[in-house]
Amino acid sequence: MPNEIQQPKPFDLVGDPVLIAGIGQGFEATLNWRVHDGHDERTGFFNVGGGTGEHGQFQIAAAIGNAAFQLDRLFVEVFEESAADGSEINKVIVPVIYGPRIVANYIGFRIYVVKAGDTLSKIAREHYGDSALFSRIVRANPLVINDPNQIFVGQQLKVPIGA
Image (cartoon, rainbow, N blue to C red; front, side, top):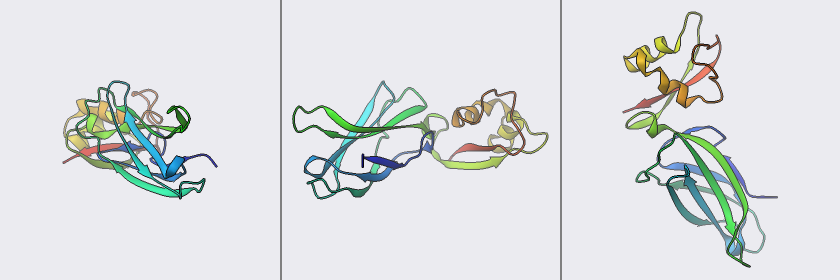
């Protein structure tokens, strides 16, 4: 069984800290984590299993608040460092969307189910008080919204919310 990230799921909307959970095993019970956007990164390590091939559950809170991320999309990685040469092996990568890059003081998101007559501008006005901020909703839903001019009744949209 390879290492597995069970949380966050691909393209989840995350905040700080990024909560990472799953099942894994590593040399001397050590695995590493990395959160990055290709411009900046935060890293750390944790222990899991017994160190001699046993898999164990893990859950960590990866603090990333002081990173200078430039993109909404981050990558969460869990990997083992090879005892032979220090290379990264058994790596698992999950792309996520970073809420604090979309709204200031990000605290979470609301699920909004699109109704007949809705537009992204109308939804933005309801949640942010400004219809011009509809791009926040687009950025938070890259797998749901292909064209900002076309949303469909029944779609579930994540609306990022700040404090």
